Image (tube, rainbow, N blue to C red):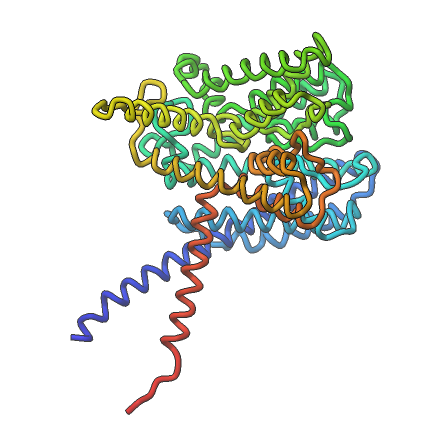
Length: 506
């Protein structure tokens, strides 16, 4: 009987080992190709430095070394044909960590900073598309380093969109609530991953190129035009000069930034339909209409609340500020810490909400906010009229109960992360309002926050903000899957050690 019972156990253990091997192979493959991409980016940054007659040996040497060595192994790496979603998340986290390590080495090799913690934090902020820079004296950095900083944000934004396209629509239905054909696709209608990735590359690259050209026409130099374009379309916010967009003191530059920041907050799938000329599909997108309405209401509210501080100039400042915070682009609005409490509250609410689902930005995102509001309305109606059947809808389509349950879980995780961040920053010495706004901003991958002095961050504050940035960039559910897999793997190792322990034979 024991012999008959053995084969199923072996088949089960074999299946687990196969899934584990598939996850390991995919993580190795993703890490190697991340090294290749980062290496090529470093080489490009080095060439930019040479064109500007700046030191570039460190960037070129590190870039050639990383890309060449990784390429040799990446060509032989095995890729599972149908990896489980958990393996995709592990691969994404592995690639993200590898990119941070390479970027950290780049900052140290080039002398941009001599501090390892500073280099790590700058790299995390870059690939998380968050404007929390700790590098001093930006204008004294070589052109290649400035270009690399901006490129890390562009790569981080593209990686976030690729993760959304490849894994989240298949694993987290709360993030792809049905009812909007112009947003993220649901499981049934999602095209193949390669097709989605190609569309993302076309839209993301085209918008970035147009943004760089527009900045150049507005008066920026070539380096600034490309650097700020990378930071704009990725919703990152890194700049080559202190003071953000205010450094240029140009209405034309701010107008270009406002337009492309607003576009950066629109779903990349929506932009794809716009490129295809499907304007009817765009108008049927309830989320797009809600996002544009939120921008209009936010600009009107901030203008009214700050009118006494600048008169007609308040409208221009409000347009830049609202589009920046709504898309979670980290360009810091000039003078917002001196605004009234009402204006600051509006800005913080917009930071927490974020743009549409399917963007490189962070925040709670419009689709979740709409579903949460409709769900709250349904519960209120049910309390008043217990026998009424009220279905939650987005646009003209109803939302199933399972996505709503996951949405409630996401709300709890989001609120818990903010509260934990406030507690940690308060312990590190930050005041309560500053800690609250900084936590929300870091979790939304924005960066700057009204009322928070982030110019001189201590070690404890950096640790808290780095964790929040990672949660905001990689999302809660993927990290939960990765953490759960790590715990499960550790338990299996312990059980294996116990089962392989010394046995007594009679």
